[in-house]
Length: 390
Image: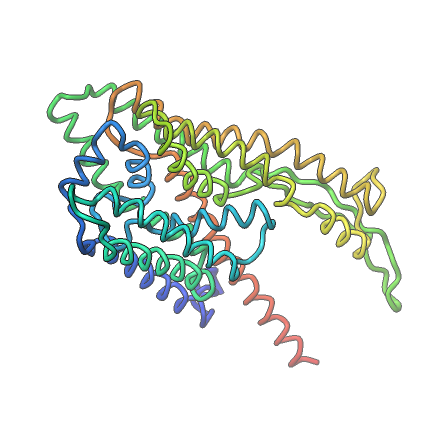
């Protein structure tokens, strides 16, 4: 049986893929529904103005939903901010009641601020747009959790990717139009494509590169059989935090740009700096070296030349501390590169380093989940055959 046959043999895989695609289509449809009481023309002028840096960053990050003033203009941004706050103060955990309540508070606050920006002179506060935006943000948060539980992949990352991917065709068309109208030289266009290919290759390497540690297992007698005595590899990823830190840094960048926006290059640079800070802040919580060391000790495994228990945990922490800065610096460079190119060449939006990292991370994560389900399905079939023989 081929790998494709094993994937199709899983009765839950195709329904999960179908539900995921349906949920993403519903979210994309919501970004096209106009906001009641919104004034798109006035808001477009504000977005293009000198103080619209934070709004432009949110618009790029949400895939254009903010510029179109849709009911999902806020997207999953309040939910992301709530996840970041809870993770910083409570550590990594499954979203719970405190995360949802904080999402509600942040959604109401951001919706009220956006509604005040949309208000016409001489008119009071209009509650309808604020309530609609808050409800849309809560719906996006619920949909992301639903995809994570019933679909395939990380719901938040998939929704963010859906918005970002929606802008890629228009960006490619604008780039081609600049070349056709001779507003950009062919050399500049080729340089942009070369930077895109280099960033894409770097993102793929970053998400797949890992350092392997050799783990030895002591021999032991179980019944009449000699067990153990072999060795295996313990992989440690170079990008220890994956796509989560990138999404958190991107969502927090909007708050920084609302207070300080020196130019078109600021978004990528600020996001890169926040990514480095988040990597340093979340590094100790993201990797449970003590848990890995305890599991190795229970199974009779040990690192060569290192005693089991706390010395093993300390060696794992040391290895992680060595890996994390290099991966964070490469990710920060990928995030900052497009913004620096836009500022240096005066180009419109053509590709975004944050979007690139998210797209690669989500694609590889989804493929990994599919492969894990395929392998689990294969193990279950082997166990069933052995049970029938017994």
